[in-house]
Image (tube, rainbow, N blue to C red; front, top):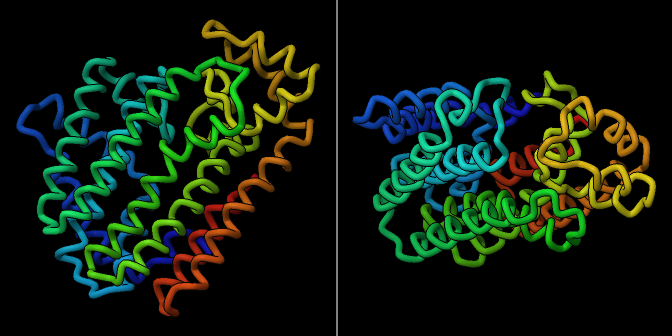
Length: 320
């Protein structure tokens, strides 16, 4: 079953969120407006809004309230992608030119900053102090994740622990907070929204590790960018960290610099792909996914829970 089919019963509410995203992203300044329209056109999985909606179904579901949380979280996510593309000097995302490539770094940074500010503005429509504290802390952590990504570029001596902390901040926390804030906005009990936070965290970790694996196992067409882009950009992911344990592969990986070309790393990619590190990384992703499933079993049985299970299983088992 395709991902969108799993939550097709949410289509009407997701359309409302899409309309709200357009309103939120629009600026009176033509350049910002154009950049944001391009971002929206590029689309995406909208996983965070889906998790917000499903999590809110453990309380008193009201699309007119929960939509503000969904829009705020997706806007933060969009902002982080724009900033990431500047950090990585990326030309393509989802097969389309990035804001940074279409204009320049300065416009991209202003675009990301504008979206972050708008997300906070949207969230003011939720009258809950706890929700605002959670969101504010999440934004801080996302920014710290971006800073860590810059700091750790081409640093081949980093630990797996450093990598896990970075992806926690860059990816997992925003998914965790999507689940938690969805539940809080619908006045679900504290016990429920805390469990949903941990569910989202474990799914988010699995999601990012899977993405990092796919950078080595997918095609350029499927990725919307060249295979091995992370390594070429100096982002050290789990498969690379495992590959660095092999002295022969380590010697080649450590030759990679900012001047290395996509053609240069092809032999290194082949070494990594055939070294067994992909399978090793998949096991770590699976471990996080199993923890997410255990949390789900502690939640009340309803359509939202079964859908969260299906989505989690899908995103953790994408094509390797």
